[in-house]
Figure: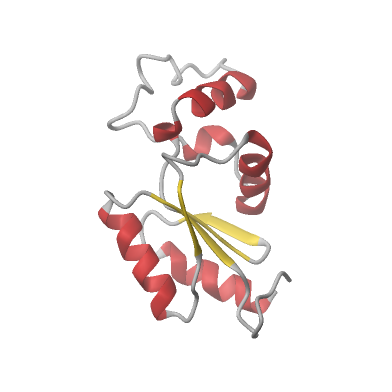
Length: 129
Protein backbone atom coordinates (compact mmCIF):
# COMPACT_ATOMS: atom_id res chain seq x y z
CA UNK A 1 0.00 0.00 0.00
CA UNK A 2 1.25 3.46 -0.82
CA UNK A 3 1.66 5.20 2.53
CA UNK A 4 2.61 8.61 3.75
CA UNK A 5 4.93 9.01 6.74
CA UNK A 6 2.43 7.41 9.16
CA UNK A 7 0.00 4.53 8.90
CA UNK A 8 -2.51 6.53 6.86
CA UNK A 9 -2.60 5.61 3.16
CA UNK A 10 -2.08 8.39 0.65
CA UNK A 11 -5.32 10.02 -0.52
CA UNK A 12 -6.10 12.05 -3.64
CA UNK A 13 -9.35 13.82 -4.40
CA UNK A 14 -10.34 14.99 -7.88
CA UNK A 15 -12.25 17.98 -6.65
CA UNK A 16 -14.50 20.75 -7.90
CA UNK A 17 -14.57 23.47 -5.24
CA UNK A 18 -17.91 24.76 -6.63
CA UNK A 19 -19.59 21.40 -5.90
CA UNK A 20 -21.22 20.91 -2.51
CA UNK A 21 -20.77 17.13 -2.57
CA UNK A 22 -17.11 17.52 -3.44
CA UNK A 23 -16.58 19.99 -0.58
CA UNK A 24 -18.40 17.64 1.81
CA UNK A 25 -16.20 14.69 0.78
CA UNK A 26 -13.02 16.75 1.17
CA UNK A 27 -14.12 17.78 4.66
CA UNK A 28 -14.97 14.16 5.55
CA UNK A 29 -11.57 12.96 4.31
CA UNK A 30 -9.83 15.45 6.55
CA UNK A 31 -12.08 14.56 9.50
CA UNK A 32 -11.10 10.90 8.97
CA UNK A 33 -7.42 11.79 9.37
CA UNK A 34 -6.38 12.20 5.75
CA UNK A 35 -4.70 15.26 4.29
CA UNK A 36 -5.37 14.50 0.64
CA UNK A 37 -3.69 15.83 -2.41
CA UNK A 38 -6.44 18.03 -3.87
CA UNK A 39 -6.63 18.17 -7.66
CA UNK A 40 -8.98 20.71 -9.19
CA UNK A 41 -9.74 18.44 -12.13
CA UNK A 42 -11.37 21.18 -14.20
CA UNK A 43 -8.11 23.15 -14.26
CA UNK A 44 -5.76 20.15 -14.03
CA UNK A 45 -7.61 17.20 -15.59
CA UNK A 46 -6.20 13.70 -15.27
CA UNK A 47 -4.57 12.38 -18.42
CA UNK A 48 -5.90 9.20 -19.99
CA UNK A 49 -3.38 6.93 -18.26
CA UNK A 50 -4.27 8.37 -14.84
CA UNK A 51 -7.98 8.09 -15.59
CA UNK A 52 -7.57 4.47 -16.73
CA UNK A 53 -5.71 3.65 -13.50
CA UNK A 54 -8.49 5.24 -11.45
CA UNK A 55 -11.14 3.34 -13.40
CA UNK A 56 -9.31 0.05 -12.80
CA UNK A 57 -9.14 0.80 -9.07
CA UNK A 58 -12.85 1.66 -9.14
CA UNK A 59 -13.77 -1.43 -11.14
CA UNK A 60 -15.70 0.53 -13.75
CA UNK A 61 -15.56 1.88 -17.28
CA UNK A 62 -15.17 5.45 -18.45
CA UNK A 63 -18.87 5.57 -19.36
CA UNK A 64 -19.69 4.92 -15.68
CA UNK A 65 -18.15 8.21 -14.52
CA UNK A 66 -19.71 10.54 -17.07
CA UNK A 67 -21.56 13.54 -15.73
CA UNK A 68 -24.67 14.29 -17.76
CA UNK A 69 -26.18 17.34 -16.08
CA UNK A 70 -24.59 20.69 -16.85
CA UNK A 71 -22.21 19.22 -19.44
CA UNK A 72 -22.08 18.76 -23.22
CA UNK A 73 -22.90 15.04 -22.71
CA UNK A 74 -26.04 15.02 -24.89
CA UNK A 75 -24.75 17.37 -27.59
CA UNK A 76 -21.64 15.19 -28.01
CA UNK A 77 -23.81 12.09 -28.40
CA UNK A 78 -22.16 10.33 -25.47
CA UNK A 79 -25.41 8.52 -24.71
CA UNK A 80 -24.99 6.34 -27.82
CA UNK A 81 -24.46 2.74 -26.65
CA UNK A 82 -22.30 1.96 -29.70
CA UNK A 83 -19.80 4.71 -28.88
CA UNK A 84 -16.42 3.19 -28.06
CA UNK A 85 -14.32 4.12 -25.06
CA UNK A 86 -11.71 5.91 -27.19
CA UNK A 87 -14.30 8.46 -28.30
CA UNK A 88 -15.43 8.93 -24.70
CA UNK A 89 -11.85 9.42 -23.48
CA UNK A 90 -11.34 12.01 -26.28
CA UNK A 91 -14.48 13.87 -25.20
CA UNK A 92 -13.39 13.82 -21.54
CA UNK A 93 -9.94 15.16 -22.49
CA UNK A 94 -11.57 18.08 -24.30
CA UNK A 95 -14.30 18.63 -21.70
CA UNK A 96 -13.15 17.58 -18.19
CA UNK A 97 -16.53 18.78 -16.85
CA UNK A 98 -17.78 15.42 -18.17
CA UNK A 99 -16.05 13.67 -15.26
CA UNK A 100 -18.48 13.12 -12.39
CA UNK A 101 -17.06 14.27 -9.07
CA UNK A 102 -15.56 13.79 -6.66
CA UNK A 103 -13.34 10.84 -7.38
CA UNK A 104 -11.23 9.80 -4.40
CA UNK A 105 -8.23 7.49 -4.45
CA UNK A 106 -6.86 6.08 -1.21
CA UNK A 107 -3.90 3.73 -1.50
CA UNK A 108 -4.80 1.24 -4.22
CA UNK A 109 -8.57 1.84 -3.96
CA UNK A 110 -10.69 4.50 -5.64
CA UNK A 111 -14.36 5.44 -5.85
CA UNK A 112 -16.72 8.00 -7.25
CA UNK A 113 -17.92 9.46 -3.96
CA UNK A 114 -21.37 10.48 -5.06
CA UNK A 115 -23.25 10.20 -2.82
CA UNK A 116 -20.74 11.45 -0.27
CA UNK A 117 -21.43 8.47 2.03
CA UNK A 118 -19.59 6.26 -0.50
CA UNK A 119 -16.41 7.63 1.06
CA UNK A 120 -17.03 5.58 4.24
CA UNK A 121 -16.82 2.30 2.29
CA UNK A 122 -13.73 3.48 0.43
CA UNK A 123 -11.93 4.41 3.65
CA UNK A 124 -12.84 1.06 5.24
CA UNK A 125 -11.62 -0.87 2.18
CA UNK A 126 -8.38 1.11 1.94
CA UNK A 127 -7.58 0.60 5.61
CA UNK A 128 -8.06 -3.18 5.24
CA UNK A 129 -5.56 -3.37 2.35
